[in-house]
Length: 367
Length: 87
Image 1 (tube, each protein chain N blue to C red):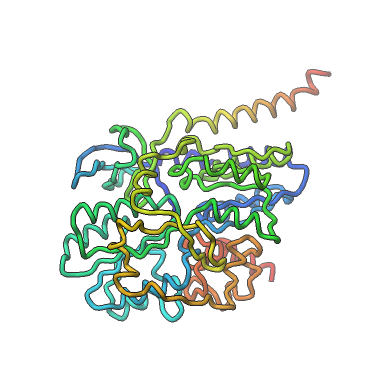
Image 2: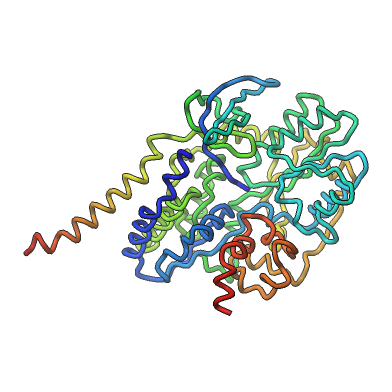
């Protein structure tokens, strides 16, 4: 496929790795924010191509992974109700709630459907006016315009039977939380390319300045990631802390204005709880008052529900980069993709699942 | 989750008041909402996420990485060639 295969060339990847080796004189800790980047790094073994002093820390950029357990519990409670069609991206079905996951609700007769786009849920609401159709609106900035359009379109079409369970989070507040933590090791960031395709670069300049960290907006293919690392190491070695754009083919500095406008029409910024991390102020999106009638939590009387994370899952430490997945005593033993204890073992972009899929043989050899 | 797949826009059409398009991903055609890439034309590549085009691919910028790599290659050759020139 054009704009995919040419960015996976092994020979060109080695040239980037050599270039990084040539400029790196000291150890550096670089965090890739996005779970899609983590997946590519582990899948293509990009971390293993790098000189040993470059340490990649896997970030919290997997919306499935950071959705707090109480949102899963709310989803389970709604999906189990008679008359409800509960729509979700596929990854969410196996994320464990306090007692159950959505897949169990489905196996027990709940009408849980996997959709490709939030607009598919709108189409279902139109087709089944007698049923309540609820969409699990999770995601980062990349997904917010799609989720916003679904709500706006439902209103235009007068669909009173459509609502959304919102768990929308924002990347820059999470970066600030990571950098402000006393145990922080991150010295440079690869920012999430598709988040920036929507939001642009503006929000990142203040973070780079305040915390003195280089931030490279980076794509998702092996050559993109290696070039992003190369640009980041070059800045670190030169003592610079600027925002640079590796992913120019998809990211404009100003972002996508039409998408931002639609998001701002439907959502406003507010506090959000992150799984394993806790509440971060101004780190999420909430429905605006004008769209409050589409709030599933209010419609089903679940707004007050809270739940605690399981104590033995170390997802929070993994998501903040304090631990690698294999440092968790449950990894690959009590916690596997078939029986996940935490969300990072479920999602294809979760660091734990990526290590389990691509690095398990290697772990066996070590132990 | 924030996956964006590049595909070629092959047809434009409106639906329920929204601009839509058929996008080919290596021959597999999907219906995509174009509300956020209103200037995209048939034949151009867009980046698609959960049924929405979120960005148009800039074909000139897409080549930049290879120019950069070629420059690294030339610098390497110049470096490795230097001792011979001195001799």
